[in-house]
Image (cartoon, rainbow over all chains, first blue to last red; front, side, top):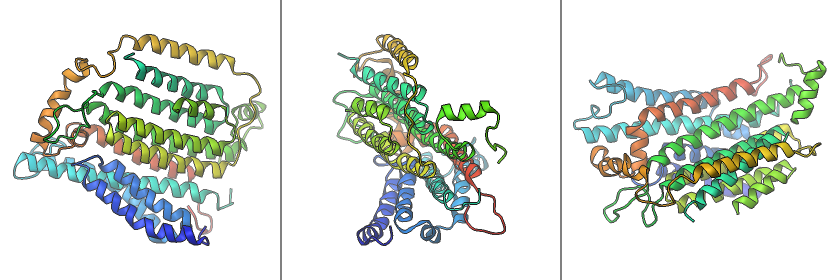
Length: 142
Length: 121
Length: 169
């Protein structure tokens, strides 16, 4: 598909805008519809579009396999880490009100980091599952 | 006619259930399962709506909001549903490689014949 | 409209058209959800149901490469079972409150407390995000773990053993 001019140009034009929209949805999830899940899926969709038009090896150069696999786990660890931070600062597990100088700012900080963790995990898992399906058919050693 | 939303959700649920149990193709069963799941989302969210209310995002110019609690539940359910679909499809791919077919009747026949599949991959 | 789509999905045998019809069905469901004021859920259903699900189904079809075989016997018993389940459900929902009844129990017990206090206690206007990330944060931790487990499971199922260093996972 990378020989088709229209697809190539459109994919290259769209990918940064879609990624920007994913970041917008992530950070405005508190003021409007959105949040971690939607942002993660939209970011994965941008990279999947790039992979479909330009081929999986080009997408692998863009986002290496090792990074995607470690991001899958790092997202969950960020989420759990926010909980542990609540423990270390004096509250119970996943208490947000101890994270900053007053409870409301602590809640906002906790919600922010939790949504970041969720978005990281969801986007890398969706991308990894897609590349697993897409690369299975190429190696005929089974 | 206050229960119309429930009837629509139940019709979709019955159709999804029929696809899942009546068709032998494994991929179609998974599609039927996902249709079943989306009908359950409708069943949960429809009772939360109040006519004349707005989305549950607090703003000074609105006074009534629709109920936010089903939304939270269904958000989780959607993501878990796609995780299940991904795992199910990975299993279907492995079954196809082991048995050579994704029709339930042919897979059962191969198993009962005993020459079955090289399931020790 | 959605009923027509679902019946078409049941009858169609070409799996590619089944996948496309399911994508249309997900988009219609997302529009219905917007009409029901569930904007977060609609965004998630549109991106996950119509986006990721369609991509995964197409990826699996590319690997499986088959069409549905002609059914050999008329599925009368499953049809009767489905209709029986549907009748039982209709009987069950007749006791539920009517659509958009402000005095229904779900609007009077816990929801007003969340709607009134979420902005003051968490500083976040989107009540759904506040409940998801703060009031019910444990559930979201579990859900993130489920997503991670699904990814790990797919990797475990579809990873190829490396033999003498040839590429591809």
